[in-house]
Length: 427
Image (cartoon, rainbow, N blue to C red; front, side, top):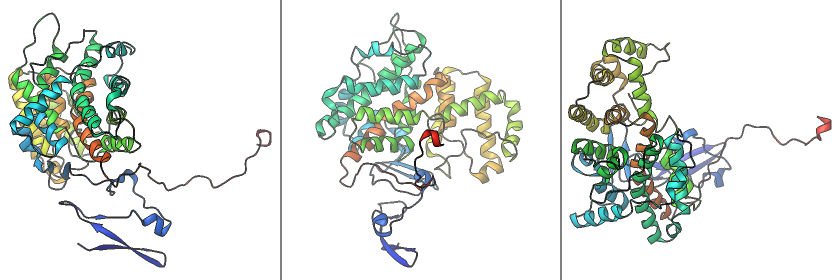
């Protein structure tokens, strides 16, 4: 590592500090670049640009590593609970038994939503996409909870963080129930965070709902695996919205809107649609051959990852979970048979091994959620539910960062130069 990076521009040469994190690539600090050179850097998609300092999540895509506050995602998914991971992401350390008990109780006490929000739902068409509903309803929370929108008050930030994490399952379940025309269910404080969500989603007032512990654990793992993923598109959106001083509910609604994009949160739905397209296991060789054909537009969805050039560490846990869920529910569906056989063939096919096209978390999560009973329209809603804690943790970190400024990317302008206006009659 060098102490400075030298950049030559024309006849002049400039030096910029090189910053080192605790782990990961060094970063060239170019904050003074424009002021010194009257030039911008150009990085579409910001794929080579560090937009902030963060202590929350670390990814090494080449090695297949994902750490939350230093803890490997596999360890957390296997041994921890979603509530414990929420505490970790928010506070930086794993909780003691007493701290976890207090935190879980606090979240539980915030799970109910304002009664007038129920009428808010009725403003949507019954066939509205659940993500459209979530964008509107989460943003509207700022109209109901005025006492936690002052971003400069640390206590209000904590309350808003707890409210968002607690109320997201309630709102997600309400969006699902609304699409079915079924009545909303109030939260049950005797259940776990994940068990409560399952009951509010699949239960009905006419009879008691018994939480299946295998399904509860599978959903808890899915929530853990989606809790945070560094500076992805939706997280960057939350940070950018928050940099203007927008209230936390508006910032999370912005993150939900970004997540809705099929290139971000819709990957598991695309993977499941592909499995339906294949249909039966005997057609797998045909589609693998198409995937290898450069002239065929068909692509295997749910394989490979933009960041992970090795095996997605989240997929390892999902590989085990999908089998547990299938066994518990006695699943007999050719689509699920396709998933298991396609996984096996891809993991052993030299072409996919060489290209490092390993199954990713989206490949598994889609089939698990479908087996549990969620329609594909709810997949991204569940992603948003789980990612809320990551968004909130990143938002809190951004607010308290002394180097934080309002986001203002620059551009390479390629439009017309200054022109003289001509009245309409002279054009």
